Length: 104
Image 1 (spheres, rainbow, N blue to C red):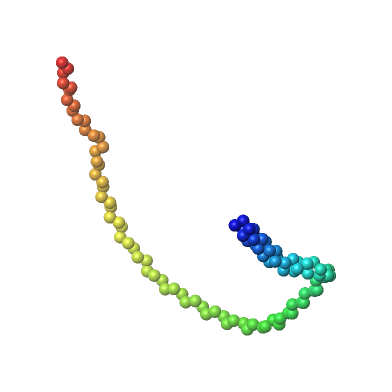
Image 2: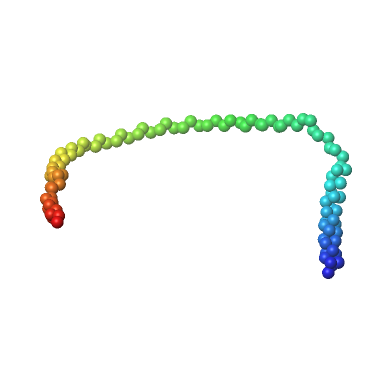
């Protein structure tokens, strides 16, 4: 039982090692590349050509705006007077209380 467990672990580590071989080879190839010279200045940008300016025709004058007709003034009749609100008594009438019964 124990030997099959170790065989599975060993097979897992071997598979892990073989899966990373391609990564190591690729990294080594990148390190062995010669260093490329870096440009010190950028080339100048091309100039933007100027476009010809078209001549625009003049716009015709705007027609005169028509005048608005006058609206006759309307006189409203006066509002009727509001009815008066009756006064409500606020005082509460007092209620007579009976005297307590005599004590024995």
